Length: 77
Image 1: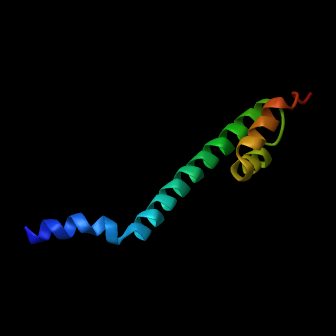
Image 2 (image 1 turned 180 degrees about the horizontal axis):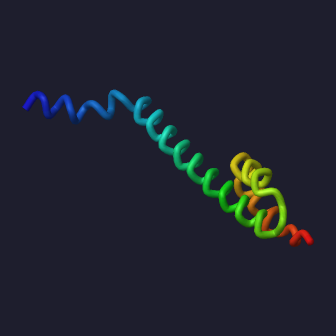
Image 3 (image 1 turned 45 degrees about the horizontal axis):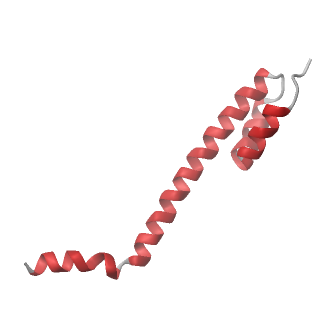
């Protein structure tokens, strides 16, 4: 019984660790979102005749802003 009481008290004693873990998880999701935005930006830019590498890197760094820009720019001739 004593072991179970210790397990129930553990979250109260380690709130800072829980916050650290949640920040890490949030960071992982932000990184995944940035990579997805970078890939989408690269594909759309290439289909419009622009540099896929340039817009892919910009999409990785600036995510949604670059995605909006690449969607708005006209096709290159």
